[in-house]
Amino acid sequence: MKVKLKFLGGAKTVTGSRYLLEIDDYRILIDCGLFQGLKELRLRNWDSFPIDPSEINTVILTHAHIDHTGYLPKLVKEGFNGPIYCTFPTLELTKILLKDSGKLQEEEANYAQKKGYSKHAKAQPLYTIEDAEKVFPLLQPIEMEKEERINPSLSFTFFNAGHILGAAILKVKVKGQNQEKKIVFSGDLGRYHDPIMNPPVRIPFADILLMESTYGNRKQLTNKPEEELGLAIRETFRNGGVAVIPAFAVGRTQMILYYLHLLQQKGKIPNIPIYVDSPMAINVTKIYKDFGHYHKLCPILEEENCNPFLHKNLQYFQTQESSMSLNAIRGDAIIISASGMATGGRILHHLYNRLPNEQDSIIFVGYQAEGTRGRSILDGEKTVRMYGIDVPVKAKTFYIEGLSAHADQEELMEWAEGFTNKPKMTFLVHGEKEASESLAQRLREELDWNPIVPEYLESFELFDGI
Image (cartoon, rainbow, N blue to C red; front, side):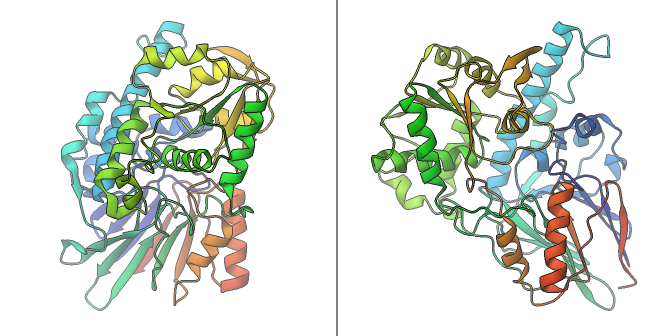
């Protein structure tokens, strides 16, 4: 039995996670993400898929974020029709995220057509809402920690990864004639002291390990991110401005709402209105109630006065009209909107209106990938381009350390130390080059591992003759 691995994404970048595992003639795609950020990465979404999608037998998802699921509609459109395994919350979240992604693809194509910058006579979306919906019947939910057998020689198990609702570490078991091998995919690992998600579980053994390295070169120095968030809100309030928080609808928005409610309850920030301007975030927040045993907040959600997703200062905006009405607010408010890296969605019109105002502030609460507007603003660019216009950046910007849903370098090392063996091969994925290489150095020095930072489309033979 031959086992091979090919990196179709997530190599020296934090986007486009796709790992092809070949066991003889059986092909499993682990994650199926969209590339985001730098133009050269985004263009990969339009390339022919490196393998005929109809030749892939199974897809297994670690979690619902678009950089792990967003290519599924195109994969199905091009011929994949096998099962897509995931956890129960991941199934519900993936439906919401893919429909939204299809909508954004359609809107971008219409805008390109209107402005005349498409290369085609008629601008085409990467996929549509209808394409996204064709993925749904293929989604098959599996319980955490329950071994699922694909065939006599292949099985897999999900374990809690923290990070977001339903996020999983994946362990694949390959049984040959002589021996059994374990291949572990970390997925995206969460924080050890996240206020909402449980910490990632430790896996005792792996023959082969694929480990994320998003923050492989960063130590998040503060254990009290809510204090920094409170400072930024108070400073904006003193300036008479509006605080705009770009936040992913899944995970980050819910964490921000938790901290803002806590700060208001403790009197550390004023009782000003909090507007969640993201229909997707509204739908996602409901799912936290449905899957109480997947997170820490279940008892809080039951208490009317303690629920951070439902209180008097909090308003959810669904419609485009209500979203636009927020432009008229001159001060003393907090607006949370997606996307978290300002690559699309309603956050763009808030940034378009708020960035030129010195009294307003933009508070970044998560990782900003290379090539995104969020990264440009954080890097101190004087203008950012939106809707074909260079918008001046005069608003104050903040970056709150410690609000990321990703483990930092210390936590990644702590998780790696949980292995009782040294994996035969360790691949560092889902990190920009510097982050992956920095983590690789620490793993070499402290654990005597020999990690590999793979290239895009690089292939490896893992086993031959097991």
